[in-house]
Amino acid sequence: MNVEQDLAKLHRLNSMVNGPLKLVINEVLAVTPLVIDWINVQTSGSAVCRYKPDNVRQYEVRYQFGNIGNLVHELTHVAVNESYNLDFINYPN
Figure 1 (cartoon, one colour):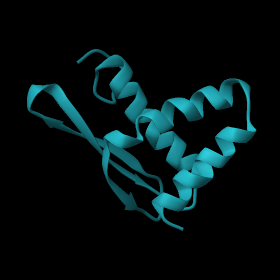
Figure 2 (cartoon, one colour):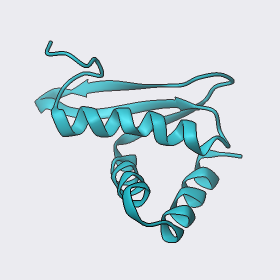
Figure 3 (cartoon, rainbow, N blue to C red):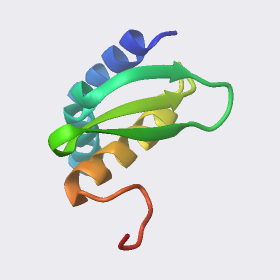
Figure 4 (cartoon, rainbow, N blue to C red):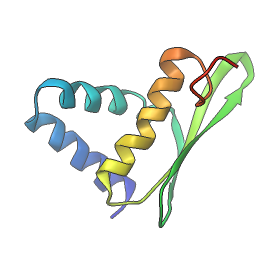
């Protein structure tokens, strides 16, 4: 598996589901253009924000290639960071 296959699988899944899951998938797919580096890891995963001048954010996403749940989880971190304009911690910084 690779990231292109995983994203294609996520797009196919999105065309087959409704309700809250569809909303979540739409939200995480919308932030994929912000990811500049996809890294395959064996366990867990992470999303790292790279701040650029003028508050432009780009992301590095580490996840287990082939694990769509792990991919969605890490992209949810990206979506939260973009939505709330905060780092990944859940308290004001």
